Image 1 (cartoon, rainbow, N blue to C red):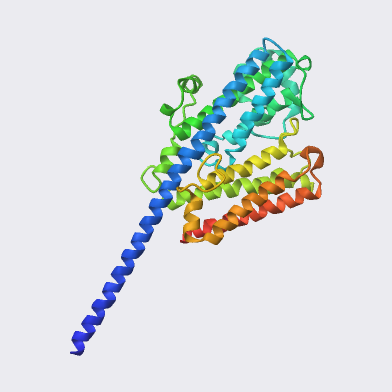
Image 2 (cartoon, rainbow, N blue to C red; image 1 turned 45 degrees about the vertical axis):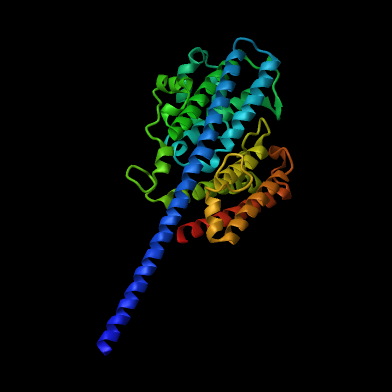
Length: 373
C-alpha cells in the first residue's frame, strides 16, 4: 500500500513538472512570437521608411547642388538649405539604429563627423588640380571633410542661408560632389535593410555604378532572428538590439553631443554649428528612440507589435517609466536656449543632460525586463 502511495505521489510530481515545463515552453514560445512580430514591425515600419526617405531627400539635395554649379542664385541656395535640413532630420531620426549597415559599412562617421576639418577643406578648395577632378577625389577624403557638415559649411553661416554671391565656383562644385557621396551612402543604407531589389532603379544604378551594393540584408536578418545566417542568435537578442541602439544614441546625445561642450571637455564638439541646427538634431535623436520603441515611424503611442507592447504586457510600470522618460527628455532638450553653439553653458543644458541619463536608465530597466521575462 505504501509502495502504491509512493508511486502515486511520484506520478503526481511528474505530472506537475511536465505541466510546469509545458507552461514555461508555451510562455517562451508566446514571448518569441510577440517579439518576432515586433522585430518585423521595426524593420518594415521604422527602419526602411526612415532610410528610404533619407535617400529620397539626399537625391533632391544633390540635384539642387548640381544645379548650383551652373546657376548660382539665392533661390537655389535657399532650396538647398531647406533640403539639407529635411535630409538631416531623416538622418537624425535614424540614429537609434546605427547598428547593422551604418556600423558595418562605417557610414555613420563617413557622413556625420564633426568638427569640420576647415584647414583641410581650405586646402582642397585652393588645389585647382584636385578641384578639376573633385568627383573622383571626394570619396577618399577624410571624414572631417564630408557628409552633412561638409555641405553645411558651404551653404550656411551663423544659422543663416548664405548668399549665392558669397559661394565660390569651387565651393559649389565641392558641395555637389559631397552631396553625391552622401546620396550614395543613403542609398546603401536603404538597400542594406530593404534589400537591393526593393529600392528604386535609380538607386540601384547609383550603387551598381559605384560598386557599393550591400553585402547584407539586415532587414531579412532581423526577420530571421535565431535562425541560421542571422547576426542575431535569438528573437530576444534582436529585440534587445533595438533597445541597445536606443541606449547608444541617448548616451551619445547626453554625454557627448551636449555633454562635451557643456563640461568644457571639448568646446569645439558642437554638432551642426553653421546651420545652428544642434538642438533640432538632439531632439530628433530622441524621436528616433520613440519611433524604435513604439514600432512605427512618427508614432506617438505604441503599436500592437512593438517592443513597448511586449514590455507593458509583462511590466507596465517599467514601460510607463520609459515612456515618461522619453517625453521628459524631449521637453528638456527643447527647453535649452538657442542657438546651442552660443548657449551651451546655460543651466538648462545640464537639465537636458540629466534627462538623457534618466532615459538611459529607463531603457536599461526595460532591457532587463526584456531578457528576464
